[in-house]
Image (cartoon, rainbow, N blue to C red; front, side):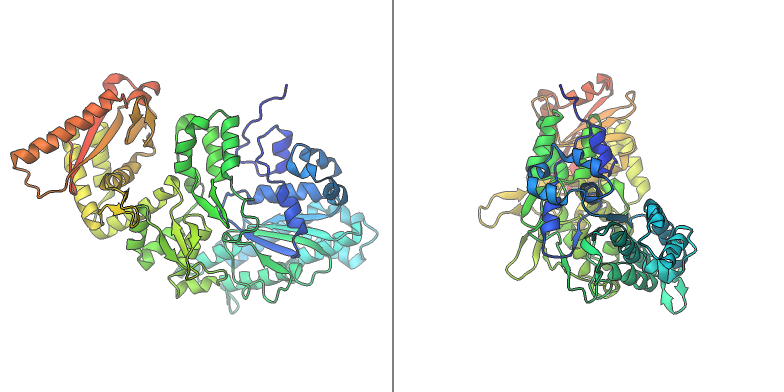
Length: 591
């Protein structure tokens, strides 16, 4: 009987995962598809943490001539069925695999030092070359200088091409070269060349220009006209313009997030996700998982799930749904850029579930961000904060927020605008939230009204209707739900914040589950009454709002929405049942 596989969270080494009985989503056909593609060098940009590093590790272990024992790692996967291909190519080529994702320095001197260390480490992995009788004396001297980090900048710039030449001489086979996160140094250099303390210059070149100059040799000479190259695969987040790094390449092809090729090789497809959920007995969570972590489309493959979030959710399922992917990186550049260029209306549309139609640039130079505000949509889509759903007849793409997890980013951006433009302070948010979780509902209502009046008067809350079917696709109640949920995210450190989850006989709107089981838990039901001319002193109006509050509270009781709080060991006396009734843009909580 086979031992049940486990999730190896955080590991990106294929061999380690397989040997430790880890669950691996089978992407092995990428190996054959990559190798048999007509291009010598392939660039595949994808969002962060979508499996790029693991896929390159898989390719390395399959082809590496030094690791023939690794063939057994692939026996249970699809590639093993390709008998002829495996016999001809498996473990038959020298492989160079290097990741640049750690090169994120603040100036060129530090960046070059990091390159020296990284390349020295790579050369040490192939130190056996120094014993080869096929290398010249001067080649071995360069090899030793690179290892000892005493080589000059030109030698480091040429080091990747040089290593491929040395390996070909030694093994008498052409080389497979894999470069992961090639754009990390470029993005960092661009970020740190913009502000006053980041105008670091060496000679006449800025930090950014130095990096571009170095990369043109480091990657350009490696992949352009390198007679030792068998195949090359480059991954990153963005597709930096050919004219800045990949100039005059004629053996180079880009497979972007809109390309129909290799579109199912990064991220988890619908069938792959269902298989892993079934394996770990989580199929009953499928609908909620879909809302939180699904929604991407690469090429022609829709319903791509975020693999990082799926793996983390399965590992910590009892903690509920969290923005695992969003929290795994820094989106401050994107946030500041969006606020800086001012696209508030578009962001509001996206949060409300609308699509926007924008051009996605295939190639760009980072300096263009200074003059072309429309590049923000390429940046957001390439980084995974938006996804394309279809191409329009004008060559643009319809874009949307893929899921609940990413919506948190845009809610945060909205809150930043509110803090800046309508002066909703963090102190007010904290005070209002504290009143809620301490069961001071009258005080909570006062603060909540102040916040909602400012925020919802600042944004359009009109219901959205499908033009063809006339069905409502976004209701006021959904919009109120989103904003209430967004405002309560300030409690995320101390509470699990859940939304639209099944509980006993129905679905509650919002639930706050405290990590400290002695604290109060909260279940919230949101209602909307018809928008009419409101007079708070009118007895009929009071009756309508009071009835709506009663209906919401009765719904909580009847459907036992608080069941999940009890399951999480929250004492019944510590359960706050809250109704929020919106009349127009005005919230009512207490009678």
